[in-house]
Image (cartoon, rainbow, N blue to C red; front, side, top):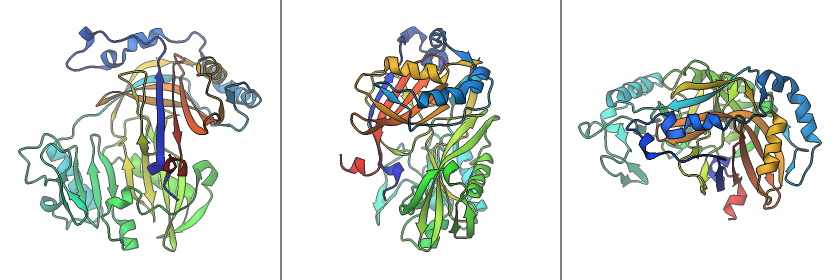
Amino acid sequence: MKKIYLSIFFITFLLLLFGCSKRNSENIKEKQGIEENFGIQKYKKRYTKVRKKLIDIKSDYEKEAAKMKHKTNQKLSFQKCKFNSFPDIDKVFILETTSSDIGINESIRVIREWIKEIDEEKLDLEKELRDDSGTIGEPVRKNGHAYWPLVYDNMQKLKNGNSFYINTASCHVQMGRNGFYSMSDGTITKYLDADSFAVSDAMGENQEDIIKEGTVEEMEKESYELLSGNLTISNAVEIVKEYFKKGTPYPLVEGLTVDVPYAEVYRLRDKYGYGFLLRRKYKGIPFAWQDYGERSLTSSNVGKELDEDTKRAYVADDHVCAFVGQNEGERIEEIEEQTSVLSLCDAAETLEEKLAPELQISLSEVEFEYCPSKISEEQCVVVPVWMFDGLNQTDNRRVRIYVDALTGDITYYTYSFGEEDEAE
């Protein structure tokens, strides 16, 4: 079975921001903030007048969900839809997330500390630490592997430590802007006695034989024999949460936690391992997430791009052995606070009114979330949304739709899973 995160193919990406105005060039400064890059004041002027208090939305949520189950029209069907729980909140925020470069010495310091933690101090960083930013040279290929320039041989040429990495048969780590982007302590590669580097663990190349997958809620009581013995999926999820709570390597900002919505069970010879998809949760509200995949974007809006959480972690014994994905260490600032949003029914009515006629969707999941959009290389704006996911029955493709819970703006794209992509 081909892994989902390697096979998702995004067919279209249509970003519809109703009433959005272009920024005037005089507003663009050397260091742009959320006003210049996003237009927060113009955004606030588009707040819909049909919003309701969060406390009322929470109390009415199950009743509205039951109502939606029996509601049908030409565009939307909720008969087979799962309505995820509404968060226990009384306010939402518009958030700004920012990241910054990691210094050369700082990057070396945290990598050196990490190899001590996994008992790989024998590694000679002068011979193994490399930079794959592409700013100081191209890789040299040898025995099927790409070897980028060594950090210690090029210290005077480097501008930052964002792209430092180690990749050997015993371990792998890749630095990103906010901390580690990927890592493997070599547990899986060593057990398989694989003729490969440890990066294969982080990228899921040793976890292809998936025997079962589903939401954590569905699978949490199941138990399989890992390398260190039997472990339930629920206990493995707690291991994952605790691991990332400590930071990789930097601690999370106050109010931020890691949520684990999806699980996979894969074979490791006569044993098993778990793969988990991760996302952030801020003050009770989960972030929008998607799996890895090749994206083909076609957008009617310039200057804005969805940046859903995309991360995987692997547990093959009693700890997190490997992971890959965006780091949770970026800064988060609360820009705007609101106590009222679109209700579930009002968000669905907005969809019915504004979706293109050719879309006839059988919904499979609905959730209230935070959805990030990239407004610069180092910046995202994050707004509360209603997420609707389902199948477009006119072309048999999956559809992911976000309805902005403050303005009613709609963002959607279609995508395919698994073998469908290979047939394209």
